[in-house]
Amino acid sequence: MSMELWSETVVLGELGDDPQFTDDLNAVLEQCSTTPTVDVLLNFAGVSYLNSSNIAKLLKLRKLIVVTNQRKLKFCNVNRHVWGVFLVTGIDKLFDFVDDVPTGLASLQI
Image (cartoon, rainbow, N blue to C red; front, side, top):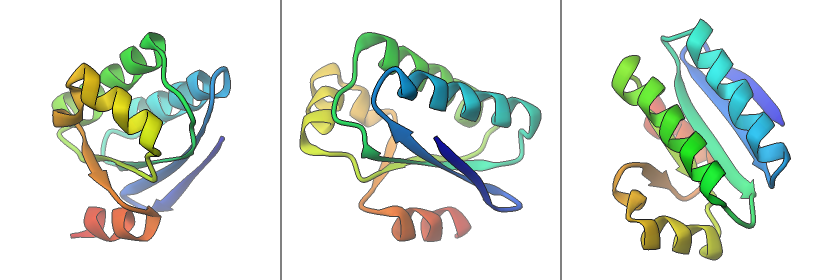
């Protein structure tokens, strides 16, 4: 995964499909645990499917970033199939979605 500290307060994570997805989220979880003052934008451009384990990791990440750290978490470039999983499970209401990386980075800076 390409994870970069885009600014002092924003982490940009590029996600891939499993098994890389799990490793990618673990890296983001670790970064947010050690630096609780960052907002996170996850780019789903490389993700073509989600399984229940992936969803559980996303919910854990949300709890850490949004609930515990009181920071922002946004997803971008979510393809139609992955979006369908979010809709069917009802967790689309728990996350913030933006169209692309530039829009997501701008929305985190506001």
